[in-house]
Amino acid sequence: MNARDLLFRTNRFNLSSVHPHFINPCCFGEDLAAWLRGKLSERGIAASQPFQEDWGWELPADFDSNSYYLGMSGNSGDGATDNGEWRIIIEKRRSIWDHITGKGKIAGDDRMLTLVEDILANQADFHDVRRA
Image 1 (cartoon, rainbow, N blue to C red):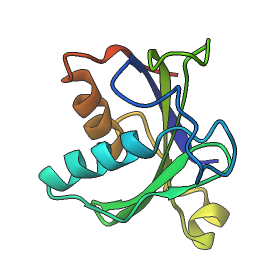
Image 2 (cartoon, rainbow, N blue to C red):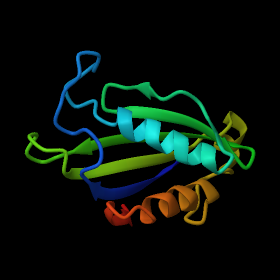
Image 3 (cartoon, rainbow, N blue to C red):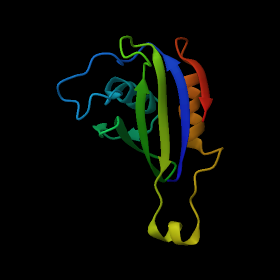
Image 4 (tube, one colour):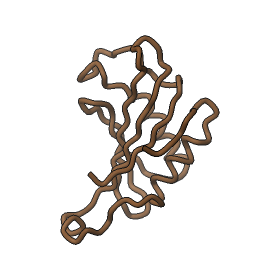
């Protein structure tokens, strides 16, 4: 996979209430995906409607002539509180030609990666924001 991970801790998003529409009981991240979509939109980045996967939520976005999937899931550790750790996987989509030639890999200075990292780092109630 052509991706980088960001981790952070917060109690802002749901990690304790399993909703009836969840594919699996661990499909947290719906509210995080909606919030991040709004933050990207504020910065002029087109993001599609988030959708559920069997492990969390994905948010498709286009930025700098590149397409990305931002996958998110969380874990409270005890399952009883919303305080926990979240992971955002930033996957840069590549064409078949890019795969063959080895081009288009996500780098540590990728603008989508650094933008999302900046958004997370500037939230007062987000802690321990780091790359995994």
